[in-house]
Image (tube, rainbow, N blue to C red; front, side, top):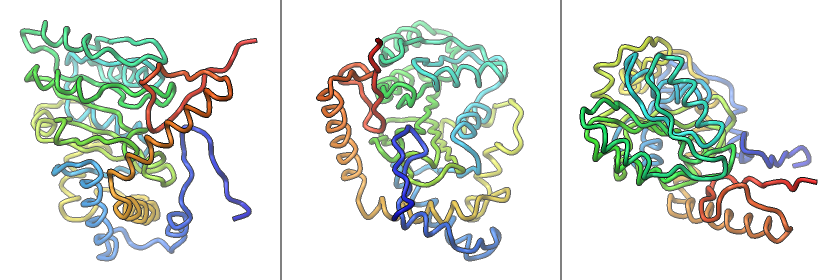
Length: 307
């Protein structure tokens, strides 16, 4: 196509032609049987993508909406939380948690370096009174191209016994292997404009059983982002508010493409492209921003030379 745009930025990412064409259809009623069929299909597809038996809830909003929803639906004012911060979106987690009056302890990492799982382990093991209610972190840090060891950190959270894991997987979901149930992740937040291959406008929150247990005690204010409303309606193949209907068309098309390719093939493709991209950058004499062997399969950042 003459007008095709090949974006070389962290996101939005390029959208496949058949996904774009699916959005050109006339909108349909979001309470109609036809739309309910799309909600039912995409709800099952989202479980497949997250590798979970739990419901994955779809919100009309950006990835930050999903991040905020993950916090306000599981925590209460004054709760003590650990926030990992080694990039711009780690910083955002800290800001959101502080905005809701949480007692935030920040675990910092240098930009370009991964978070140290042992720092989380040490603090969690020292919390003998089980005051820490959540560990909040970014999986793939968009601003630096670093991937954090979500699997190991989640295991330390599980060993704690009380805290839950809330993970920003906006960049990594759909590009990286994130088996929610196998790893025991309690909350995963993601957005449509990265690995989902559709334009911005939808966000997704997957809530595991321990997250719903925490939800029963959460007292933070919520209305549009009250996930109990989304859970109630998704079980009726619907949505509590007016959704972005045409983005649902795109979601169905993109997830169907992904299922045809298969999860393992998707993950292998991203790793292959990561390796090729990083090798090409090094071949040009440029430096990677992310530390060696800690680059994300979803994004590669370059360190420009100073003159």
